Image (cartoon, rainbow, N blue to C red; front, top):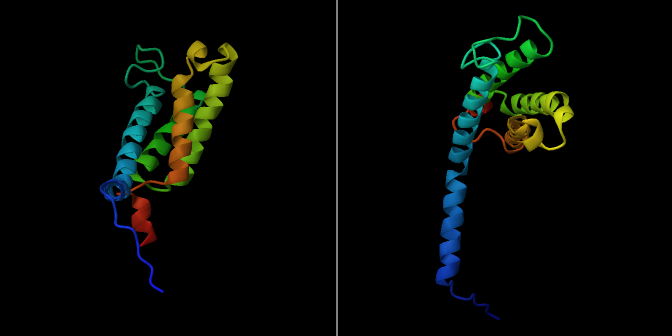
Length: 149
């Protein structure tokens, strides 16, 4: 008994080619996503130290050692550098996700129910974005890849 396979249609061939392309570029896109997000988050963390307008848009910094602002800024800067480099990416991204969730619920949520009302959109977005990075990993061009070799 012989079995025959149906000839591939043009649509099936196109879908397979597109999927193959998506699979090939996924690590690079993840790496670019990781780099852009961590750079933006680094800038956010540096504001706590008076850079990029500071916390008051006049160059003001969080006082040294003040809880939680100073320590949050320090964790944000160090974590962003780790995520940018792709070093301990999943752990760092998990910590940063938690920092932003904490910021949302302690700073923004008491001001109103929705992020649009309490100015918490960046905190909510960063919390979820870093959670995604923690789950999917660093992508290509990460120091984590070099450590595994």
